[in-house]
Length: 410
View (cartoon, one colour):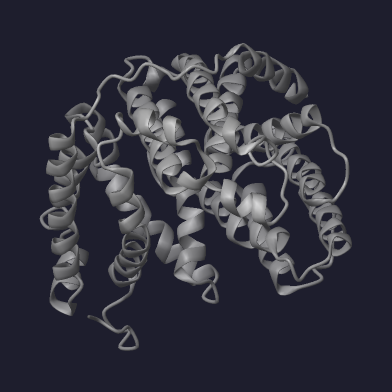
């Protein structure tokens, strides 16, 4: 039996003991350094635009190692200060191939999905690839890595759809929970049919009678999803209940990632992955604070006064540093390079998110945190829409087959 509430309590204690003060960061960026990095950003963006022609996209497909990845590595080094040892991890040959493999499999499984839906699942693929690396198993798209990552585009979009009533969402959760437990459940929609096919992929790779913890982890994430419906109801849910639900949802999600990678884990590894999941959930809540407040969705961040949000960001960074230390129980994380990469990536995203959501923080806090951003917050906000549209444009073009003449190239 998974000790989910025990893990929640453990990380709630770490959370409560995490200070509100601004953390110490390894580097402060001067105005001149920011301007230099912004110039490097502009240069990279210009090169990306040049690559969005039929000729260059076909070159990328045939040999990404010669064209795109060296340029991307330079971007991460000269704009966001990633170190060579960190980039050697995420730009290894293994990591370069999995994204394309996942997209091709996803398109074959769900041709109705939009590229951004598949991109949503790809983010989970990267998390599972990181766990594969830490567990020192081959980095690849296994049936369960594929299936679990595809659950997100289907189930999350259904649960987040405002046109579907809470009652219908609850009924869906009950049917899906029954199917996860091995029950024979008639699908009530195309989405459910797809989800039930994905569950069958788990069952093929991890037979229920031999890998019971795999399915307990799936039950845990489903329970977390069901409990999280309380966060969108207009009721008087307490701050303690909100924290418990948010920690459960985030922690259980990555705990399931681990079991669907390895099949079996130690209690120490279970707890470490649970904490990693909580940290990623807190990151999501910081990134989505504007949307959550607008939609009246309750999270730890959306339920506090605006002037206190800086304290919660500080607390999250302190929490994350402690939680990630527990990941050293994995053999592939013992030397610290991968954990340094994870920590640098998440803290960079947190700082950027504060800059993007500047109206939710005090001027004093923004001025203090901006010192540790490699880019001016105003520059980050200016580039947000342009970067997002460019990223998806490259994503579509890189992964589309040459024979598809329907793709519009710039």
